[in-house]
Length: 200
Image (cartoon, rainbow, N blue to C red; front, side, top):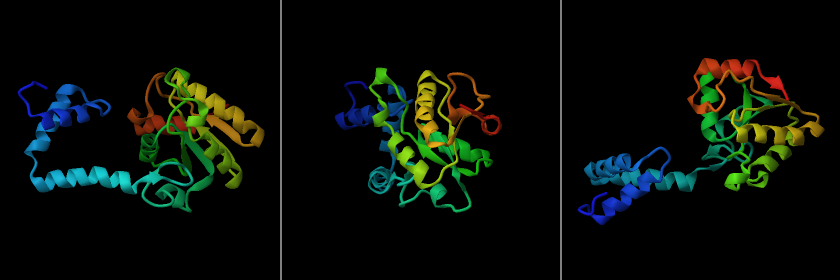
């Protein structure tokens, strides 16, 4: 931002610019929008950010974000708890839930194996997945990581760990483009990918 702007406004824009997908111009617009808010609106906005950090944590079962002990999916006895769909991030769960076709549960890795970025298997929620397999008598694990180099490497790594446990490991039959992201896929494509998944 230009030097003519107040320092707190510049600092706010810099914070917005740290968010994914927000460039400096968008960050400046957001900062100016915050300035146009009433005091009560600004306080509500700030409170929402603070509140989410205080109250939201990882589900003790699937590692999704929740404000309870178990997320709504894990707490739902109507779901098929013998089928676990492994995803990279919580936003991928939202994509699958939009299909209204998947009746199993999920497990969130919170990343993908990427040695270049310093992400090793121990930094992901893989231990939690393995302990859950025997505890919950899981029969099938669907590897639903993105079809990228990191996504494929992660799927293969986890499938090798799961095979000795006698669990069926499948991979989505991607009708998705290579390099595509699950969160941007439409419901029909995701449903077909689930329906036509293959064993690894």
